[in-house]
Image (cartoon, rainbow, N blue to C red; front, side, top):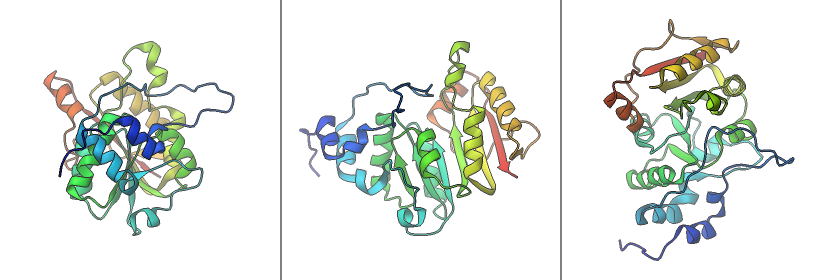
Length: 249
C-alpha cells in the first residue's frame, strides 16, 4: 500500500470533524479545571492514514444520548472503560487477551490516540473502541448507570506541584460518577508510580460510600495488566508502583 504523503491533519479533520472536538464548553463560558492540557504533536503518515481510513469504524464520537453497547459491539459482553490510555500499548494487549470483554478507551492526546487506532486496525481487534473526548463529560452524559463492569486508570498525570493537585483526575466527585456507572461488584482499577498521588487515590476511593477496597490498603500486582511505557520509565527511576482495586458494594 502506497503512503499518502499529501495527507495532512487539516485534511483528516475536514473529512472527520469530530476528531477535533474534545469537550463541550460550558454555557457560561467558564472552563472547569481539567486533568489534561492539550499539546500539539506531529503525526506520522501512517497515523494520519489510520485516522482518515478507520476513524468511523473504530472510534466513538460525542452525542448527548447514551451509548448502545450492543449496537456498538454487536454483542452483550461486559464493557470495561479505560481512561487515559496514553500510547495504548497495554490497552491493545488487554483487549487482545480478553476477547470476551468489550473495551472503550478514552484519550485526548491525538498522537497516542492515532497510534492506537493504527494498531487496532493492523491487529484487526473487534472488541475495542476508542474516543477522543473528555472522559468525565462523556461518562456523565453517555454511559448509562449500572452498565460498566470495570474502569481502568493507569498512570494518570500526577500533577506533582501542590498548586496543581486540583487537576488530578482522581477526585471525590469523579469517583462517585464512576461508581454510579458500575454494575454490582464492578471495579475501579488504578495504578500510579507517584507515591503522593497513590495515597490521595487510596484516601479518595476509600471515602466513597458505594465502594469497598478489595485489599488491605494497596493491591498487589495484578498479573494480567501489561507494563505501560510510563511504568517502565518509573521503574527505571526506582519508583514504586502502587495499585488499587475497589469494587462496587
